[in-house]
Image (cartoon, rainbow, N blue to C red):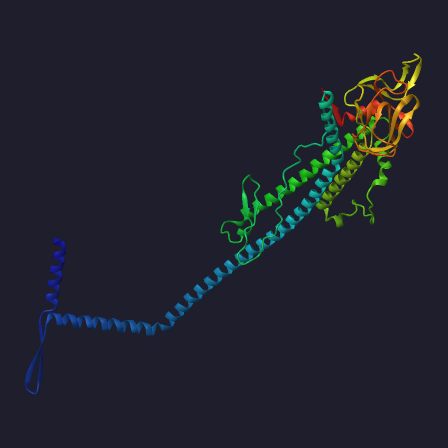
Length: 459
């Protein structure tokens, strides 16, 4: 405070010393006049003079250096305009590059999803074909189990369960249908697919307005599409493995009967195949039609699986026409197929069937669908029924106590055709069961043993 007052006193002393009151004398026509100039007036004149001189100096400098100043301003303006245009060019280039990447990504995404969609349709058709292929034996198993359940109630026999089932294991990851194209409207609709990580979602339509790095989102989409492609490939690989194994199992069942080769049996059923046609185009040489390397490989594998499913369906249909199920639920084997000692005269003789001992009135079931070719009395057989199952297979049921079908009647699988009795040349209640193939009597136990791999008896 004291220092500030000291400076103020010094300034006032300086002004008083510089601007003391002065008088200007003017003599005119012998008269003398004077003008008194106070310190304040002198200060005002000094300020006005300083401002005037400053303006004259500034104006003089502008006049002298006008061209240089204008040139400097022009250069600065041109430099600013050049920097602005360069920045705009950089922004436009970045925008064009980003837009080009988005267009390429969209085209690649749509092309990939179209391929996945086509594969998805083919796999759906394949799975439907596989479900249809296994429906024949599945229906037979249900009927077989139903008759066994009824037998449990009536006769108290041990229950039967299905041994061989279509593999119900998971056949690969679920295929998610993500092939819908996002609509291009004023405001893009949300188009969301699952990410490769569990619970992760990707908004495809929102990528255009996303300020974050688009490469991360594009990488997520690529990873998801690759995951879906791997899932589809894994599914077709698993289905191919299962169908290959299933075909081998079905062929082994047919081979167990020791009467015919599985491929020969399929040829017998070729007349039942659906009518088909068209020009032959070798799949191995038709890569261009199949769409190139990867797509051709997938198409070839799909063709192999489809052929396996067709063969599997034909094999199951052939097996369904074979008499593999046991005609009785509860029985004991009293005599086998082949040479034996005759129970009446004790001499060695050939036994053309298998004797199954049971109680009077036990229901006799048809081991396969077919047509009754004979139902009546025939010599030592007593009451006998003969059924033609097709493909060269016939069965006979002798010593019946009662027949519930007539000649020419169509018989369904596991339909009751008669009752156990002891008619004809018989020593007690039992069923004489024969299996014929191509006019030659065969060992029924081979068919029953093969049938155990379709229907298993437990207890």
